[in-house]
Image (cartoon, rainbow, N blue to C red):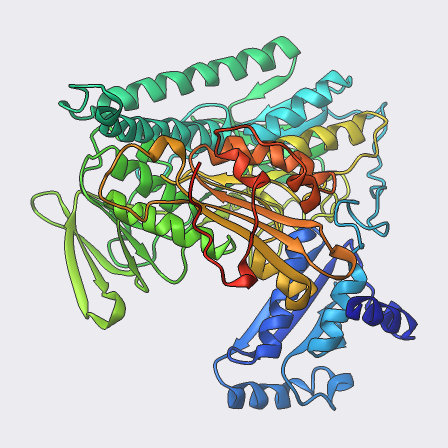
Length: 635
């Protein structure tokens, strides 16, 4: 095959070792102009590879609007990279080493060949063999004189998992957890973002909205009188918060029973092994440890427009005393759309989502289109290509949002009861004392602001990090939990098992849930070439929807399996994506098979459970490339 030929040629190239991926720290830079097809393909390939190896590879993109701008830039760039002086085409790709030196890789063909040389022919085989399994020695000795063997900074899911695992292995452990109030004044207890202001309250409120859908549909199933009354926000809020407080208490009990010291204090490095701890009253103490794990997670990024202080975030919405009412959600990621979805479903007031560029960037585009259609049909207004220019608090207490209208509609002003900012999250590292002139100097990624790690080990050998603060790691609770446990086992047990960050399944809890694992179709094409990738697709009506007519006859679920059709990936499942009811429950099981090297033949030979949504993965027959309709008829 072409891929095999490219690999053989590349392996014979004497300079290949010069460009071999250093899985410890690899940073590739790419530049080109936006309409160049060669640039687009190289960009897709590199970004796809960074998805496969998120903690080992970062990709920096320098994008130009026109060919003329790119060529003018390239002329000046040659002075920085003399070895590329003869390169006059688009794109150009180069390595940036830790010492800031640059190494020229080449154009599109060289880049794709390099990407293919990195990948194993078996995508289920795990991290390549050049991934280091041994950590840099951190000078740990059992007879040290520090206060603790390990101090974990951050009492979220990952930090708690790491601390409890380390204690089981005989370590003396302390956990710091201090919640700085949000700008709106919200604060919470032990357990981190997931438990208090993330996964747990989000899923409960999503479920409340789904129950509302079921109530509306119940009359078609013979139930009467269920839709007479509305939803009571205060009851939901109180029950959710009571459940969370129970979890907070349970975590404190677990730490106490395990003999782990819990410190409700804010930590700051004042030396390599010294941590200054400050309580809510300002009292300070210094504790010492042989090893540290940074697990502080992230906090929502605030808006930058005038009046941004009037907006709340996901740190606040679940604790809001009164119903949000008519709400403007700013953002297009999963947090924004999940919140917009359940707020619409609870029918407390209209919901408008302001989208700057692209909904659910990085997710399968066909599935995202279905999610968008489903949300709009449910009543969520989605305005694309805009950001708020100003937020003004009116005398009546409402918020006047001004934005430049999408599709050239000019300046738009609209009143809302609540503005919810969900434009992203930033690592909660300020104040931790990690700068060059602080207690310790740890390498932090220039753009993301996150800690650069190799197997959770920072540039300071005895300081480690897990969870959302790691550059390139998926921002998912189960990832932090697994990474924390495995790290503790390597630090205090006899394990050398590493956290594998690829092939991690996730679900977006929008009204039409979306479960996904593996590569998107675009990423797969970028990695393997359009000639080697296809997708099996299906648009279908779940049985549960079949006897209720809500007037939206295009209301469908969607299923896609991205497969290899040629070369070393032939018949391999490269990604699974499903937008349907209970997608989270469905994708979890398929993720196990995917990690074990699932092929499309495996799916085709599996007898489905009928009638279920999940069986759709086992009955796919329409290839997207065929142009045939993906709409399914019959049961």
